[in-house]
Length: 167
Image (tube, rainbow, N blue to C red; front, side):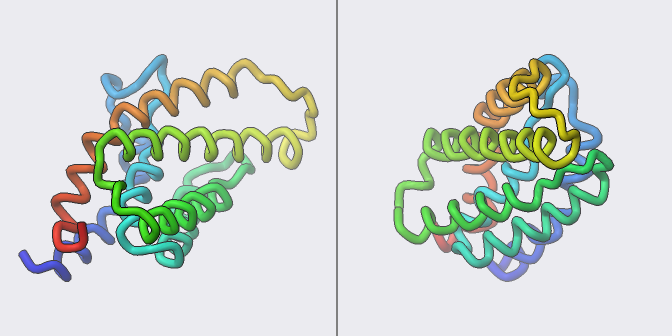
């Protein structure tokens, strides 16, 4: 398959992210908390395509995910920040193809995303300034652990399959 066709297929795979979120398999969960599928899609894309494409992809992916979320907090700011940051790392470094690095970046990205949602719920949505919520801390830890464990396998497979010519 040509590179352009693979890139187009990868762009359409973003539509599977909400489906993966809604039907996350139970064997990929830790205590009922699944992986952050948005970060797992965005990480290889931003590393390869650069900061502006990562920023735009984070906005588009956040918009898609916010349409299925009725909670009031948005994933757009965190995904845009992560897309830009990972894009900058991809243009500055050649070491992002190592599996440990991909897992670490996905783990940090999951923590940043969950802290962003946590802060939005505290300051903007609920108005409850009780800083520590046990459910938020548990969700943050469980989601980041699962994402950090899945990322080396999934992101390295994605980068080798869809972006072979750019690595």
